[in-house]
Image (cartoon, rainbow, N blue to C red; front, side, top):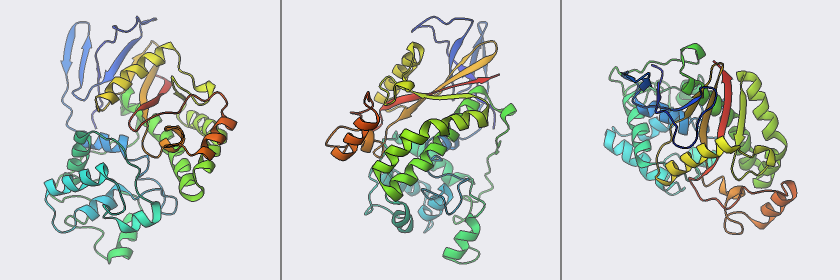
Length: 344
C-alpha cells in the first residue's frame, strides 16, 4: 500500500497557529509544498480503503466466529457470486440490498437469522460501486477460521476456488500492507486509530442491542464508552476523543476548531459525498479529524423523539444525560467527529 499524501492548505476558515496546516488526505495523492507540486500515483483500488472504512466495523476480519455481530465480507462475496454472476450483476445486487436492507430482500438468510437485518445506511452509490468492484476483482481478507467454517457449511473443498474462494481468481492480488505504523501516512494512522476504536465500541454496542435491547445499549454507553475510548488511547499511544457540536455528554463538546471541521464534514454529508480525513501537522504532533455519521440503528437513541426514539428510551436518556443535545438526527448526518492527536 502506498501512503496517501496530503492536499490543500486550509486557510479560508481560520488562521493556523504554530505553523499548523490542516490538510485533506487526497485520493489522488497530490502534495503542495513551497509552491512545488508533486504528484504520486496511487495504485491501490479505492474500494479497498472504502471497504475498510465503511464495512469493517461490523464485518470485521479479526472478530472470532463466536463474537461476531455481522458476517465477514468474504462470506458476502461468496454468496453474491453464486451462479457465475457477472460483475455488473454482482454490483447491482449489493446496491439493491444496501438501498433496501430488508429480510425479504436478503440473500444471506442464515446471517439475518443470527444477526438481524443490517441497519439502513445512506452510502453514496459510487462508494458501494467501488467497494463491490474491488470485492469482485480482488482477493479480500478473511478471518483465519473462515475456510474451515465454510467447508463445514457447504462441503469440503468449497472454501476456495473460482468465485467461491478468496477472490475472482484471475491472478489479481492487492498488496496488503498490514499494520506497520512506520509505513503509514499520518492520515492512514489516524484513520486506523479511529476505526479500531469505533470497532471496539461498535461490537460492544451492537452486541448489547442484539442481545439485550436499546436500553441496555444506552446504559452501556453511559458507563463504558469513555473507559473503552481511553483504553484505545493507551493501546495506540494517542489521545482519542469523540466530540460534537451537539453532545450527549457535556465532556464531548467540540471546541471552536473542531466545530469548524464539523461544518466541513456536514457539508460533505449534505452532498452525499465521502469525506476525506483532515490532518493538521505541527512540529511535534499530528491532529486528525474524521466524521461520525448516523445510520438507522443510531436513530434509536439519536433520532426524533416519539417517531424514532421510544418514550421509555427518551426517559432513560433524560435520566442519564440531563443536558443531552444529541437528538433529532436523520440518517447520514454528522453527529460528531473523531479528534485524535498523536506524536510524529
